[in-house]
Length: 526
Ligand code: GLC
Image 1 (tube, helix red, strand yellow):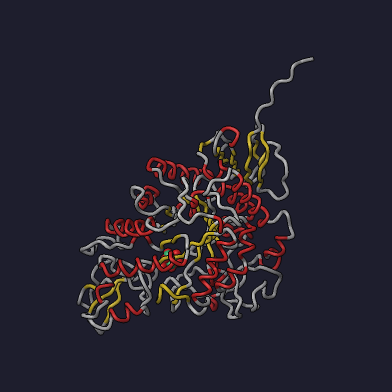
Image 2: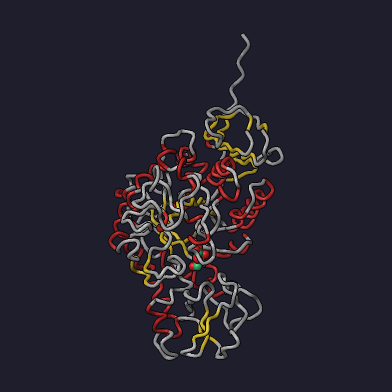
């Protein structure tokens, strides 16, 4: 039976816009993160654009993901490649115009894909008109939209350090004789959400995109939006303040007032899953939160077992729905971190087999590694270029882009394993992801089912999702040798290229999804 939340391509138009299904769509969906600069260029400037995303919608629908998270495409001087927003309600000319965004949302919906956009509430660009006004004088209308403090040019107001420069998180503004706070680059001044005008203006931003039809927001640096007052000096970084939780409750109320389920997904860069749990509130803060320890975990059984146990222990008791992620635009891709295509393939079945909402990062389905970026081509101030390499869609030299040499070098797989080559190869990573996503879509156990550890040999993770006729067992061999995993099973998906049948053995660094076969009734002896 298909419930209202099981939204398949083509059904978009038929959906009741006020429908609130029992189980929200974002619990069953697989998300796909797009870094627009690197997805596909259509206007020849070597930088991807919104039209490039629109042209690949059929590919994404066919891949079988159900929701897109698009990193910022707003007007920006690009000091932090779009995470320095100069106008939250306009598209940067690099990426297109506002109508391109409108069309993209509409067309994505027609392809059965939801659209989540990035929301950057912690800071703006120093070129945002609010900050230009704020720094124009101590009495300007927007002065206290930002965090200003101290009047001694020799002594920053406290010891907070920038996440990016390693230096103070404060920059002295000589013209007005005060310091302003920037937890990231000096070009990214922090907003002061204690100011009601900031709350109103930033809520208007949410409404702008919700009215355009977006299905939710990925909330940048969600854990640090509210600052402690007085500004404490006792740590290099601000601790999440109770006020952050108030800000997030305000965002949640706004989303809940909108028809259709709109989702909020917090970027919570804290390495304690218990601390991450707090950002769900009492189901009155964010719907989903990124939990990053798995993204840093080695491909080793004890490390992953601990990550999974931490999620079960911290999130289950409060009824919070987990998320899982292996790669994103801020960290080396998991193919690079693991240093092995086999491990990367096995990890895909682990990620998509876990209980919770998985997030894929564009190009992950192609098994891409990070590009090697020579020093003279480095773009990002803190060295995250490798994972942001352009996606190779076709054979070279331009790999489907209108220029041969886009803003960053190609990933090493581009010549042999571009998307078109993988399309033609049934053993490719692309086909594995498609098979897994299709199987997951068909299986309520994988989408929503309970999680239960199964007995397994050392170095192997094995767990059951769902129960009864609907059960799927996920088995991941995190060792470099073959392991036996006996049982009466039907093979649903295997990470090992070309494996079609289950013989009770998992090859080195490989994973399988298995459906327990009901034991056959004993035959009567004649
Ligand atoms: C988040 C983004 C990252 C950005 C930073 C500052 O961590 O994911 O790309 O640089 O916030 O906005």
